[in-house]
Length: 227
Image (cartoon, rainbow, N blue to C red; front, side, top):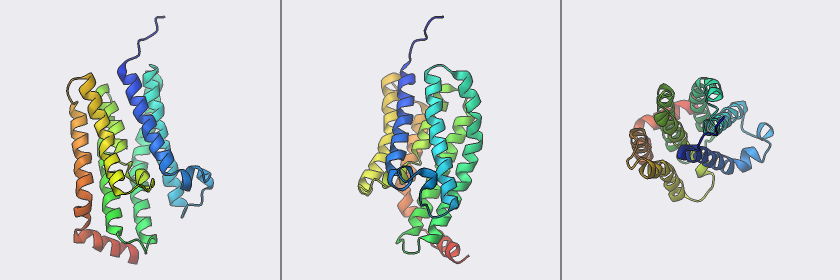
């Protein structure tokens, strides 16, 4: 049987998945990975479950991109069923974990920013990855949306590098630009899913601060802390 030729996608998308994994591991190394993961001293069981599901999603992304790269598409489709379980779990647990943080962190100066920012990026993650699952028959769109959707929720991990808000915002902006640059190199144009996802990530990143200042978020914080 002839060996199948490696395509540029077989290098780029697994590499992007590893970049995402690297961001997550370095961001949460001290509080989670080096602390023993399931043995880490996290605030409560909800945070533990959220962490396990989040790591499972990123691990699945890495596995799926590599399975496609080595042409194990049958296994890729079988393993992909896990995404149908992890995606709603990420949505529910992510929302509950943000609310739990706002309830616990009474000394945090800008709870509205955390509440609005995390929920806005979580909604974008759900939108892009759901679109990816619906586009699974169109490989070029599917793989871009999965990578870009996961990039959209890298903010909390990047923020834990403690290098300042400029680095966090710059990295969040920079990650989708890697996909955009790859499109320009390979396709000589920007894939429509890359264009839409990158634009949405930019809009969400730029609107988090003003959006969090709406009275609604302060009222929600008050309700959460007194419910």
